[in-house]
Image 1: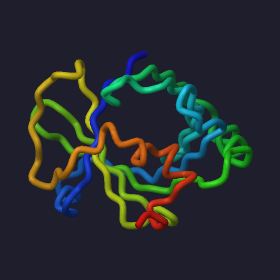
Image 2 (image 1 turned 60 degrees about the vertical axis):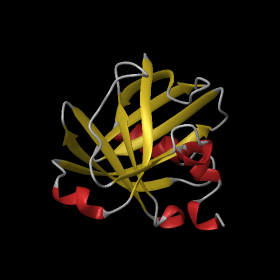
Image 3 (image 1 turned 45 degrees about the vertical axis):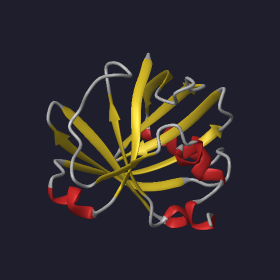
Image 4 (image 1 turned 60 degrees about the horizontal axis):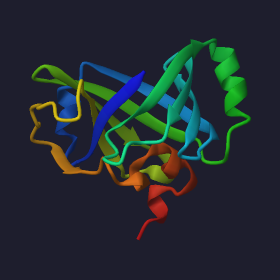
Length: 156
């Protein structure tokens, strides 16, 4: 139940030709405070409820619990969420022994494209594709919970 993940900006859309899956995602937050983020997500035709704890000092790891829930329940819970529902497409791309999840955001966060990779340890090595840009793992502005309340379009 420990998520170990690194985040990067994406420098080009070249990843789209390498993607083996793509899913539209809508997600909102019942709680966006860092100590216990509670997320409702609809991914394709499935619903999920996720609880995340506060990040480690490095920003790379934190507690994560997720359960699939019925789609209609997820749709109803989205109506209870804080303002700023996230709308994005998630692409999955293989790179060496790992899979990157690349999110292309829409609406208030249009123009932002981020890649995440889940690892077994904070120091695990991985191949970096040519489209992978600056690492933003420890920059809380790039957490989806932050983006829901402080959209990318409003940044200077």
